[in-house]
Amino acid sequence: MKKVLSLLLLSTLIISCKTAATKNSDTKETANSREEDMTVYFKATGNEPFWSVTIGKEKTTFTSLIPGKESLIFDSVEPIKAMDANVKMYKLSNSTATATITIQQLECQDSMSGAISPYKAVVEIKYNSELELKKLEGCGKYITDYRLHDIWVLEELNGFKVFITDFQKELPRIEINSSENSFMGFGGCNAISGSIFYEKDLLRFSKVISTLMACPPGNKEDQFIKALQSTTTYSIGDNRLTLSNPSGKLLVLRKVD
Image (tube, rainbow, N blue to C red; front, top):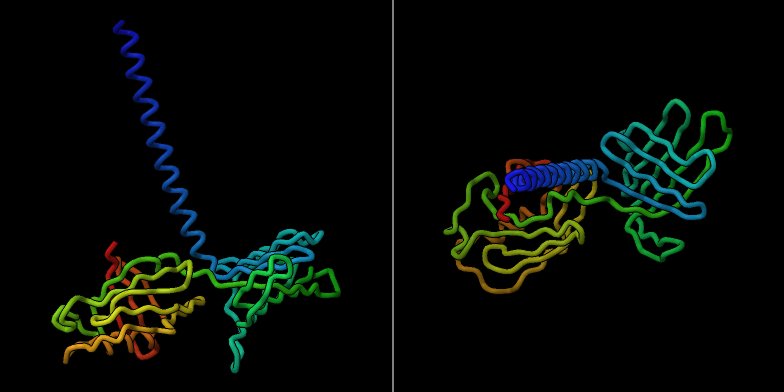
């Protein structure tokens, strides 16, 4: 009987260890997957024949159903930007092929699904041994940084620490929905909401609307909203979201959930 109990106990311990190891492995895979996803900031697809391209911080990958061009990987490069429109051109090459990817901010409809995307993408690609480029057209979108998806409470405004007395009620906060590119929250006096515009290294808060309650004298809500609307770049670290523009740091917000 003692042997049986010992065997049962040993089996339970082994199963528990395996379960814990599996959970740890799953957690690591999820974290690694998120880190990998974060490096990809633009995706586009097209049809007839099907193709897709992903642009990341390190690699740009082209896949397709075109014979001989099923998968091509390039080192990512900085884009050439148009002066008078939101158009970016990436000129890529590796030891066997060259490609040019042009991204234009222009409403684009998928030829099969009918889905609407905010960007048109054109890919021109060929092997070094070929004389003619293969030109492909499709639709794409930027992948908003998932780390923005949270609730953030204001800590600093225009370089100065803020206090509840600056707003008479409670500190401003914003809740960002990165999957829908929207936000909502409290400005320090009124409820606020709006949209976010995201591209690589670019973040803007736009279409900001608020309720119309009169604010007490000294309330800094207008300064907060003005700084929010002036934002063009961001950084995340130490559970803080820092919003800036070329003039400098505008807002520092602390993650609260």
